[in-house]
Image (cartoon, rainbow, N blue to C red; front, side, top):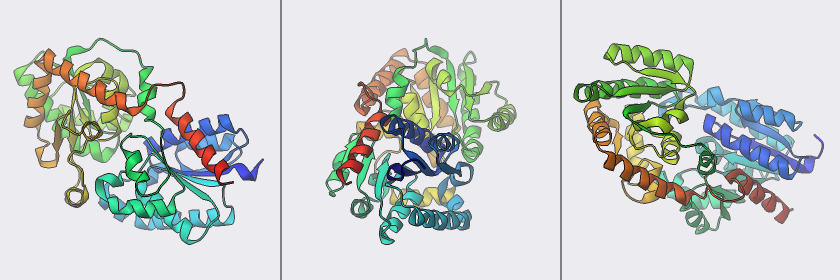
Length: 383
């Protein structure tokens, strides 16, 4: 470790966090090449940490659980990892701990660091969406954190009102996807995006295949393509499509290309819905989880919409089909509404563009570069 004063720990627990964190790590390294990274994350972060002279625990495969039931089943694993990480931070305190999204683990970690009085700054990058499910946690976060770096514009005022120093860095995806070339949309192509986790594929793709089968009855000329996160998912999706009697092309690594080309789409709730918005795809949102997870969720969520596009707009720009409403018939009707009307597709695409424009994607610096500057300013200010 060449310079312990620039030892930073960074913690992420999901694939999207791995992507955002490694961009931040590279931007920080550009500002201070002597920085050494440790922590927990994914394969991209592991490579970057090793290049900095540090080491990082690649735990994404185990840590990326979905829903309350999965968390409960893996409770022992998380408890062990949590305790070991605290011991590491106490034995070798970094100049700062940067927490990237992943609130279930990271917010508890922030409180534990403060309770143990570990001498380090705590910076949160990519705000946990506590404004949606538990705003009462915000004052607790203000006491535990030194800086919040958020990626949605409305979040800054929410956190600052609690006394927590907050920076809006812009959304990483908005800037990144501006460089993606446009493509001519095919009004006879419906894109299907069932999510990146196997549990999502098993719950959601049968509904998408059923919707495609119903669309085919009205518009037999419509074609279908689906984006799979892995080859294993692709094989599973092919079996589901075959059972539903629907012909479609299913491939991996083609999500963004399909979002650029499709006339309309059905997208699983999550990061992909914002990605679709940034690429201008007219789409419907689908979300379906285990019954227990859903029943708990509806009792704690305090926003009127699930999709971030609708939350940002403050109105239903994209139609949402959630849990019991996520039926093949309802999604087929919405798909046909978009596929049958050039006006409906263009109107939705324009509304999506207006929402994406609020995410701060333009400018000389990227979101990760603005976030890195905020980190360094926080460290230098309190040094």
